Length: 208
Image (cartoon, rainbow, N blue to C red):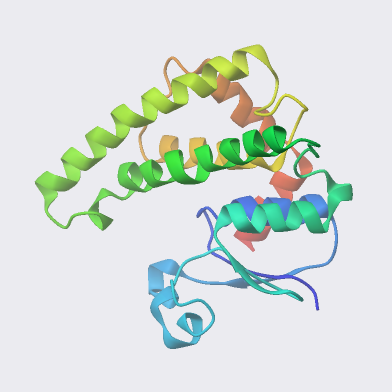
């Protein structure tokens, strides 16, 4: 079967969508309209009880969580070079840590900054959550900005699907009002990442 990606526009599912476009093999998509609550409906919960996108249906079964999906695609389609091949345990561990920095450190902060009301329904609490997320994002992103001042892409080997993850994070928070001032390398990285054919194709697919 063709891989089937359950996705929602503008969400983090844009990252595996970009990966699938980068691979260049046929795949299918199924829109899950979060704004209409489709992720909470029984038919979708029957597929993935977490009620979250992305979810990727494959010949090997259902795979959820961005990090797991990206590693699966990278190993299944090595010719696409979504991630570099590292021969040592330390090298692979470092690669995993760079992935988890996006999915575990930064991604939860994106939610707290862009959608603080999901964390707390109280307006005052939501405002405080957003402010704290802003402060923590700046601390985390400053390190990545410094890294990107020294090298063109997030990993030293060159472009990887993690660049699409970093670009999505930057898109999501700046779209939600994060002040990009002082992060010139990240801003340039986003522009460059967004011009990649796979990124343009993923965006176009979101808009259809």
